Length: 258
Image 1 (cartoon, one colour):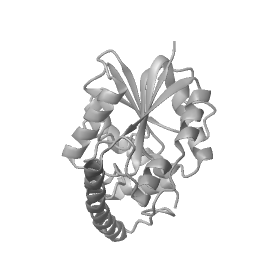
Image 2 (cartoon, rainbow, N blue to C red):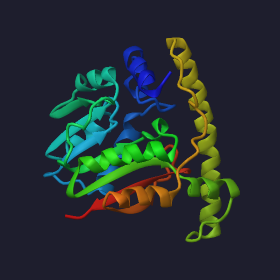
Image 3 (cartoon, one colour):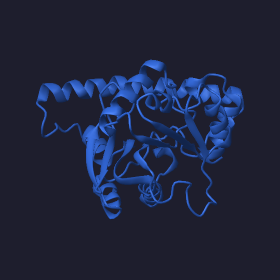
Image 4 (cartoon, one colour):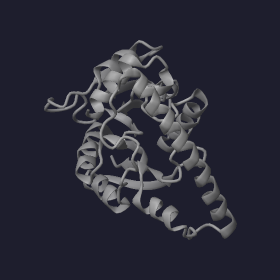
């Protein structure tokens, strides 16, 4: 089963909105609020902005961000996800189903001042896949706009955790505290994944290949170069510690000139 089919089936069968994101453990309101607040700061959202959430899922984050901007478009590849999102207190959000057969996205030429792609890395495991995704994000952003590619598995960050090396800019006490927090997060992740796998089994849903396995992650220099080739200047930001995957994932904030 491919990821699009997986989310299609999940949206059709899973009654709990928190779990339709496909994130083990779901996306409870408190966490969704925190993620939305962090995204709003990193994107620099303003009341005049036109926002695109590319790979929005059913809109748990999108709806929280839509209250902060002028217009919002939520785009996802799954028809059932788009239908469910559009029917769940969608407010003034425009919902779009992405089509892999389309020659150009409906926003070709860049019409959004802010573009978001969050928690989508499971759908592109290689740098070649990532290039296609980044090109789509860059095609959507207007001159002078900003792209946030968030919750991205990071090889450099993961390598530091695996080796236990102390961060260059952190003292030993802080680093040991982060390692201890990571151990707690890993225990939580294992429990959440097991519970989610049982939930899928009860629904009769087959998970995509690699579901639950550690993502190989991406090389920061490669991601940065892919954005630079599209005219963007990138800042890499570590995620807040209380976010799932914060011990291995980073956010890319990309600003485009006029």
